Length: 145
Image (cartoon, rainbow, N blue to C red):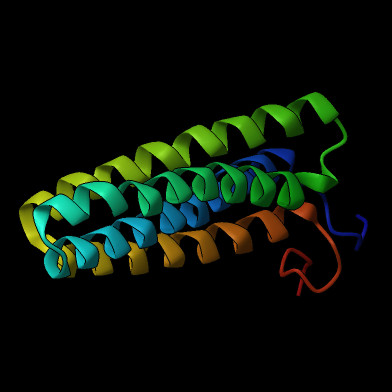
């Protein structure tokens, strides 16, 4: 029996995907918090002119951050195609998680968005730890004691 840690491609891929979704969804949720603050502070006519900008920036950030985080976390995967598919799925998942935040904004307001943002960041951190364990490197927690 070898003492070398074993790479787990499933944990690495799913952890990378979940990390991208978590951090990308947090970006879109942060943009929705900014739009919510603007909605409360500005008049209706001024809000319609300015409120679209943080939401568009949030969607771009969600797609960018989600895909880059998933691509970076999955760099230990041997197959480049799998890495690309994981990055694209993370970008789409980040947008979907961000759209759930719109429902939370409708029902729970800014406080619900803040809680959702913190949950997304926590989910991204846990998923990153899962992906790092899946790499099977020394010191990542997968070795035998």
